[in-house]
Length: 217
Ligand code: AMP
Image (tube, rainbow, N blue to C red):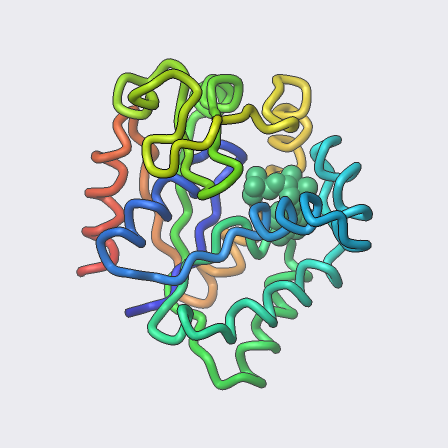
């Protein structure tokens, strides 16, 4: 199984697609956002530093992110392939990650860019709700992503929450940052010959079908 890197604007569907691919193929899942939210919840020094930056939709410093990634990709669930959901987000992160892989003797794998319309991503942002326990993602309005019982996680029964950065104001800031700092990665990975592009569809199943075609070709 090839490791996967997802590149997508905020609310482009990285998390939801990761959930579906993990269910189908058993990948290890590495969401830097989730790793950071766990640190915030546990009240660690790192979490304290990350908290205000995340609430404002700003990037957390590269050194923190790289340390989290280096530790995480060496865990047993990543041995047979893993999905990077939210990393790398800058050219520096991508270059440092290449160095890390060289040192660890691991493969880059495939990079999938999820192309999504800005308005569609914004609508998803303001209607997304998530499980703080198992991290499953739901949506208040999408018929296929609504929880069975309002505000309760289908999988673990925990009360769902709206992320503090899921507001229009923070979305717009995150979107601009994506365009400026993360979009250059599409060119970077295209030049390495590892880039695939898929379209974000209204239905998560259609997006999943496109991703499977790319992974199985
Ligand atoms: P996400 O869950 O991927 O939407 O990430 C939530 C927030 O965590 C982002 O808005 C950033 O503040 C921070 N974050 C996550 N991944 C990274 C990264 N690779 N580099 C810098 N900050 C990150």
